[in-house]
Every structure is written in C-alpha cells, then in structure tokens.
Amino acid sequence: MFKWLIKALNREPKSKNIAKNRLQLVLIQDRVGANEKVMESLQSELCALLSRYFELDPSHIEIDLHREDESIALIANVPIYGFKPRSTPKTEQQINSQVHAEATPQSSKRSTASATPSL
Amino acid sequence: MGRVIVLTSGKGGVGKSTSTANLGTALAILGKKTVVVDADVGLRNLDIIMGLESRVVYTSMDVIDGICDMAKAMVKDRRVENLSLLAASQKNNKNDIQPEQMKKICTELKEEFDYVLIDSPAGIEQGFRNAAAGADEALIVTTPEVAAVRDADRIIGLLQNMGIDNMSLMINRLSPQMVKAGDMMTQQDVIEILAIDLLGVIPEDTEIMVSTNRGLPLTQSQGSIAGAAFKRVAQRLEGQEVPIPEFKAENWFEQLVNKLFNWG
Figure 1 (cartoon, rainbow over the protein chains, first blue to last red):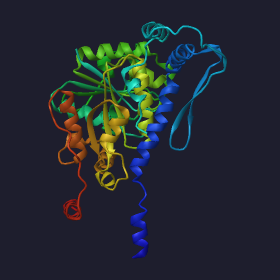
Figure 2: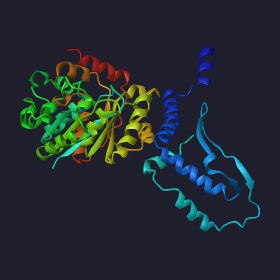
Figure 3: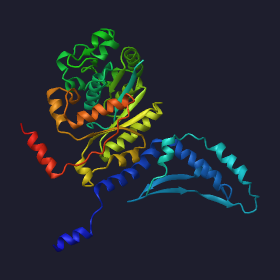
Figure 4: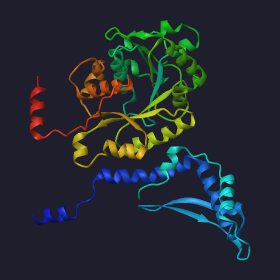
C-alpha cells in the first residue's frame, strides 16, 4: 500500500512525452545541420547587427548549436576589436535594408516553423 | 494523365511495401487503373507481399534495357481488376538505374494508369532518389516511433530539395492500447513534429502478417481494421471526405468478445 502511494506520487512522465521532447530537440539539430544556409544567413544577420556596436571580423564568428540534456543552446563566439560609441547610429530603416540585402531568404516554410520549438 | 505517388520513409520496416500493396489494391477496387512499382532493385519484395511472385517474368530493368516493352513486363493481378505490378530486378543493384530512366518509366506509366504507386527502398541514397525521381507527390510512411519519425523528417527535407512539395503523411502501426497507456505518440504528436498533412492512420493489426503470409493484401477482403483504414486512405486520395477516426483501445469486454469471435 505504502509502495503504491509512493509510486503514485512520484509518477514518471509518460514515455510518449519523453519521446516527443527528445524528437523535438534532435530535429532542431538535424534540420539545422541539413540546411547549411540557415547558419550562413543567421551569421550574416548577426554580423550586421553586432557591427552597429562593435568592430569585428566577420570571418572569425563561430556559431554552433550545443546540446545539453534537456535543451539546446545557440552558442556564438564573436571576437571584437573595438567599440563604436561615437559613430552616429544609422536609422532603423537603413539597418533593416542592409540586413535584408545580406541575408538571402531561402529557408522554406517548414524550416522557419521548426525554428520555434516548444521547449 | 495519372498521378505518380512515391511511398517512402527513410527508415526500413515501417510498412512501405505493405502499404503500397494495400493502397494499390484499394484504389483498383475503387475502379482506378493502378500500377504498383517496386523500386527496391536488388531486394525485390512487393511481388511476394502481393502474392504475385510466381508470375513475374520481366522487370523494370528489362524495360530500361529494351529487352521487352512495358506491356509485357506488367504483371496483371487476376484477383483484382485494374491492378498491375511492375517488379524490380533482383540481380541488379540500385546504382544500375539512373533517375532519368525511372522518370521515363513513370511518364510512360501515367499515360495509361490513373495511379502509379512507387514503393521506395529504405535509405536516402540512389535507390530512394531513383524512386522519387519520377514522382509528382509523396506519401511519407512512418510509425509512431522516435527513429521512424526522425528519418521521416529527414526524408521530407530531401523531397523538398528535390522539388516535391506535394507531400502527405500516413502513420502506420498505431496501437490504440499503447496510446491509451501514454506509451506511444498520438497522431497529433507526430503531425505536430513533422508539420505535414495527415492522409491516414493505420492501426496495428495482426491480420497484416496473416495477409502477407498468404499473399493476399488485406484490402482484397472485408473485416480487418487495417484493411478498412487503407480503403479510407484510398478514398481520401480520390478526394472523398472521409474522416480519420480516433482509434479507441478495446476494453476488457470488447477484447473478450473479439477473442471469442476470432477463435474459429
């Protein structure tokens, strides 16, 4: 009786939910890995954004997905060479158009949807 | 002009050939001229699942090599009107056929048939690429298991890259008992992960084994739950609005009744 009570209180998650979570995580990596352009376009957009504030060398940016037990982290390693405090910031519109020009939209409907996993 | 549909999955053993045989039979019974094409060169299986293994003389390879014409290579199913099989060569391998040759075969077949169902081999290599080369649409077959769903996702990505955007999903071997116990992903879980349209769900059914043992696709006869599910998939392919039922686990009483009825 006591054993049953402990078991009922410490109920393990249903195995189908574990399966679903594991799949959702592994598919983020699979989909990104299978689609090199996603990382390329992320890198160029990130670079455009960061270079508003810092001096940096785009060729030294490293972006990778890092899998922890129950989550995936996007790790970006961006060496910077200087801060740009005095340069006049561009207007929002100019920056937007610059970002769009550098990042060629290529990802399909499906892969954009998959970029927002429910974690 | 007919429809060329490739049944593919990435992972092996999820039921591509069984699904091709049953769906082809169901479409033929609906009155549609149907040909099932085995694209698994070197590991030919569709013929034995359909019970036509003793009647195969020529294969798609012979058509490609010009040894015989298409009409001669076709095996007509004598039990079901409108149904034919184009077998795969057993002595060649997957690299002996080129996508262009497969395309040519499909173009020729869809002139004559309403449905051309292509049974793809497992994997993502040449065999899969050949199978998909001539297809206008794809039916992704998966089971509610992590490995099968993961491979299905990969296949969906590859088909998109090949320009096949018309894709739908068939979930095979769903066990209502295990779903009820929370130990199998539901059809909603699988669709949520793969994000493509669901064409049908085939429940787990021991009758499938019996029917492949006998070489009689289940859809040829009445009374099995998987056979009925395949028939509904065929109707949906035909554009009929047939709802996908929620398969319910049997309670102890229904189990008992079924056992008693299946005894004889």
